[in-house]
Structures are given as structure tokens and as C-alpha cells.
Length: 225
Image (cartoon, rainbow, N blue to C red; front, top):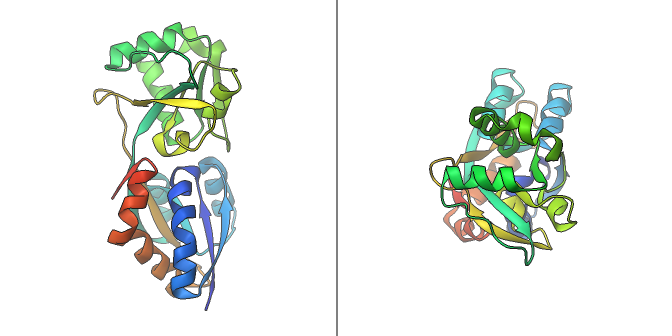
């Protein structure tokens, strides 16, 4: 039996943590999990850190494949961006892109992350021409959910992957971004080119992609890839 070193970002964390014990029981393999923000993961891996499996956005993994750090990519889940407010607070209208824009302009504080959702939102606010107007009210989080900023009352509205907002106490999920501005991110597993336990890592990927894993992935706010 092997120890599998897994480095993962937060979007797939809740599904992974629910599925991991069943994998360990079924196979006898042990999982050693390293959690890090996407930006830190890429820096650590390009800096020479070696793991067996990397769970990250497909775009970021493709960069690691091109750099020769990751050997293979396996898509796990599709994840949309959600909107949250403090528990019990009035829920803004997010039925259209224009409605979301109005909600952002009206909010006393806006929180989003440095991950894929945050990069998308920063670009969206630029395209809308409101980035300068809201800059002083924006809090960008790294390694912690943006929903926590709203739960503490330090912002009125938070944006992040739905799967990263659902577990945060003290907030209400308003819903996913509307279709006209939604951004779906594929989260994938990548086998490190220098993996010490490649066969066990492949077994973990197979387990995470199996039909039995699908209900857990859906429950945590994503769709199986």
C-alpha cells in the first residue's frame, strides 16, 4: 500500500474530504493532503516541490503540463461562481448581469478570491467599467473563503466558486451567477511527472471519477465532469 501526496486548491475540497475516507478504506492507500491557494500551488510546483497528484483548475494544470511538471490531466468537476451575503441579510437581485452590476455598485464592500473566480470577476468589473469605482471597497482573499469576510460583516457581498461558499458558516448563498455572466471552471487532477506513487494516484483518480462519486460532487455545489 502507498501514501499518496495530494496538493489541492479549495474548490474541490469538500467533495474530496467526503470521498477520501472511503477510498482509503477500499484500497488501503493513505492520503497525505496539502491545501494551498491556486497561486501558491503553482509557485510551489514550479519551484520544484514534488507530489503525486495535483487538483487544480484545468487551465492552471495545462500550464503545468506545458512546463513538464504534470504528465497527465483528468477532469473531475465543473464549478460555477456563486454569490453570498451575510446570513439573514437582504438578498440582492442577481437575475441578470445588469442586476449583479447594480448590486456590486450598491454594496459597501465586495469580497472575492485570488483563484479562478476572482480572476474572472476582476476582468468582468474591468469590462463593465466599474473597477476603479469599487476598488476601495474590494477585499481579495487568498487561502481563505471570501464568504468569511461577509460573515464577519467586513463586506456585504461575496463571490467565489459555489463549492467554496456552501461550507462557510454565517452566510446565505444567494445563488449562482446568472447565465449571461456565469463562468464555469473545470477542476482537474494532474499526475505529477515525478510522482512517487503513480499507480496509487491513478487509482485515486479512478475513484474520484467513478459514478458513485457523482452524488457527493453534486451535493458540494459542482457537476461531475
